[in-house]
Image (cartoon, rainbow, N blue to C red; front, side, top):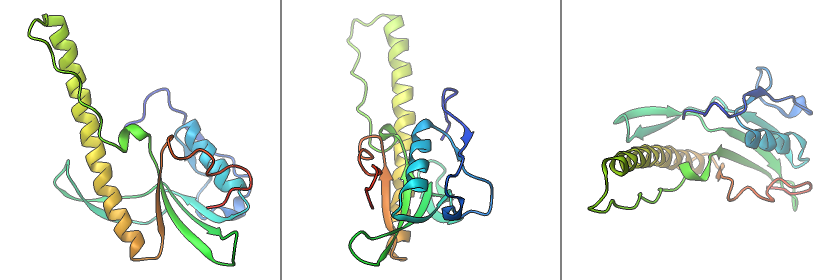
Length: 174
């Protein structure tokens, strides 16, 4: 994925470095949204340990490249259960909703459209096809990730701006 020029790129300052799994420096968040999720992982008492872009290679068939490719999910975490002593493992992908579900195609042109409207429609269609391709690649990655998780007793979650609300509120648990 190509991140826009307005996205944030900053090293996250760990509050609880003992919970962070990676031997490298603190993770780099690519958006303020990722930063909020890092804060939730770092500060939530139910999260025992977590890592960003963990070294799990998940292979998938890329519908764009038509070959096997590697996928590295965003977050791995282990959380204690609120009800018993069980530890739950999660693999989490952070993705904008527009890259998680197929977009609606642009409205068709009318027969009386002028050249300017045709060019604008062509641009909309190009963006639509690029977004469809991005969603298809993500869906292929996530199918492979679900299978990988199922074989290892790990829970798979895709976090979008539509489903993250309340998940990491103070005192919430996974």
